[in-house]
Length: 145
Image (cartoon, rainbow, N blue to C red):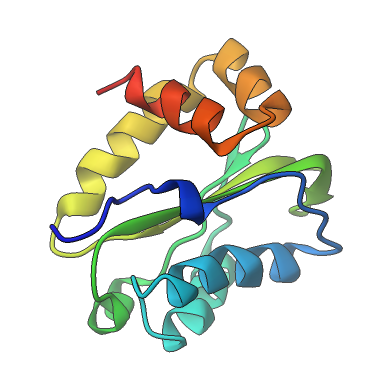
């Protein structure tokens, strides 16, 4: 692999978003800007959200494309956005951490399992929400690997 799946440049701290759609677009735009995916992938992320919410509980959402969005993925990558004030994902579900995923082949399955392990611990969520640097975020995820 030529680039890190989760790099410091893919992490946005203290973001403020007004809506679920804006949050998903921002998550996708990091993946686009860093070359992991084509711009069309963002529409597929929004399409996925309409099919079924990517809200996972514990203040976490994991926006990603639909099954047919694979052709828009250049490389596996993750974007991470911290929204300390939270954004409403519907049904009273507040999201403070957005983890955008683009998976090439089946690489994203390993990525998802690492994220699931980290995000299953409430104390990790608190650390991620209050982290002051991208390095802190990376350190929390590296503890899993």
